[in-house]
Image (tube, rainbow, N blue to C red; front, side, top):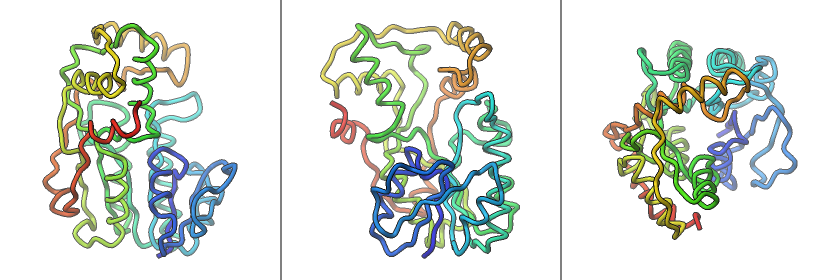
Length: 294
């Protein structure tokens, strides 16, 4: 099958290309900037394309039967907003896919996306989902919880912080829920979505096999690093004030009010539909973390 991957150089995109490397699929990795080299298999080629420029996507999608849409931003910059990149970019991608004769679109949304979202990010994801559902294309919309793996920016950032500081900072009381999903499991389901008839035109929540409180995640990271650190709890109200100030003077800010709202709400998935469709054995968080976090 001829495939296109948009958002190919991100954390999840690279994991997907690695899994597709060496398969019979012919893959076009669409990037807004040319990579320094292709370390993947010969069945993967890179081409320039920008989600903000519809015509560049049309050329990149030529001959593709299915497109993976993995592009998203978690914080707005001075040039890239949720409306421009998530919503407008999806509209460009759908238009280009329809014009190029693409049959299927597989979209990576986010757990928490709904018609009445708690954040601007989830609002943008919802509007993008509506665009895709109304496109006339076959689609699979995946809503993963927190995704972790060797190249993720979250767990590795916490690990670096805990190594350097004499304490472990925790926002709020640390009791909000997290359901970590291993990137390898997510990639397996992304690929299965190509020809899994049960996944067609479905919106699927996805989480790992365990639901933790965030303070438990902190404890597991410290255990995996074999270090001891006292937890220092920072009130949400204090973090939100700081986030408002930071957002006023820098973009992207290191932490935003939108991100704090999502964190405080927690992230736990209903995996029943996911298991019915994919029947996957999920990877335990601590077992996988110990393999690469040292």
